[in-house]
Length: 191
Image 1 (cartoon, helix red, strand yellow):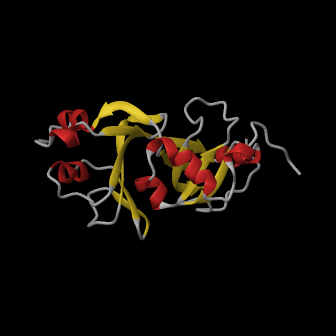
Image 2 (cartoon, rainbow, N blue to C red):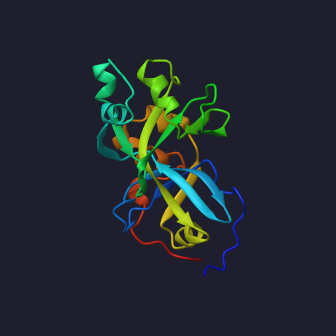
């Protein structure tokens, strides 16, 4: 049982950047957008790991017609090791879909299929990424991992989420803190 007191929403809309010594293969060199942080735990979506799935496979599974072959070939991200059968769409603001949570004034997450149906006919959000699964932490677990120096935390930057090439998101997230990645060590210390 954790003795950590959680400050409700303290880490909402922050990027969690895995430290180089991260031992969990699900998160090694990952960048995860933390969508919710509360006394019950935390939920995030990893934004820099490709899955083996293509968007067309999701359209097919959900019986959403799409004639755009390039769109169907778009790769889907691996959002985390929890609920790998559920889709999460991070996107720029638009009229809310059936199940949309506004994370900030410039970023939303939707879990309902209606956003995918809109994307399939080019009527969806201007910018988006689709991920299968999410990252989850129980009450106090994330705070414990942060005390053990497993993660860095930086402000959310939509430029990193939507513009940075996938293989550069970790470096750019670290650089956004003013840190040189070559100066990060596998093991952290405590003062």
